Length: 233
Image 1 (cartoon, one colour):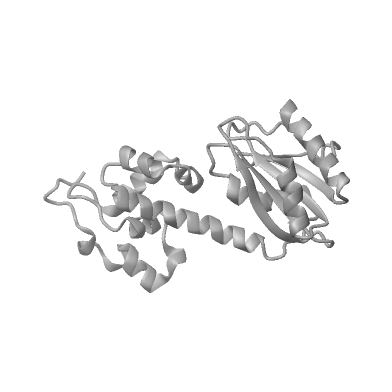
Image 2 (cartoon, rainbow, N blue to C red):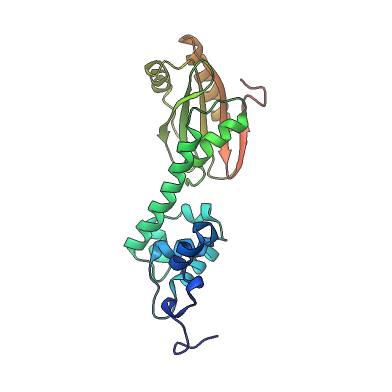
């Protein structure tokens, strides 16, 4: 292991090994996750280069960017020496932009033909959450997405669902059908009794105003449960 006297600063590294220079010469695709994170962080400390700091952060998150995205500003500052509030904000802002980009791609008039389409639609907004959220997707007559909106958020176990608000949103956007989704932060993708009750209530409300509830999916750490697939619609 290098002593402090022998440690090379990033400016002393070979040019192809410096993240910024490497991106300029070879493109962003050539950089590792740690190198991309290092560009966001900007600087390390006298005992640790920014790339080493980035590797340490990723290692602590099991080299999983989704796990990193679950950390708060406070988490980053407390857990990683060398990360202050400004650097933490930069990291979280970049990860949020990535999430929004994926959402934008999914919302380009995506046609819903299966529960997997719904998983792809809602997973980007629910994957990182440590609390429950309930989302609604509004569809036109061709089952293409008009809009998705968060209806409500709750604690780690359950969120309250405002059914009149769902119906109001559908009418305002002239939706002919809707889909709903929520997450289970615990990772358990089976529905609770409350989930089954609320699905029946939403379906009844939709039928009363002449629109269809196509599906309700539960997203849990990369897995999902579809009420439609299980014949419970």
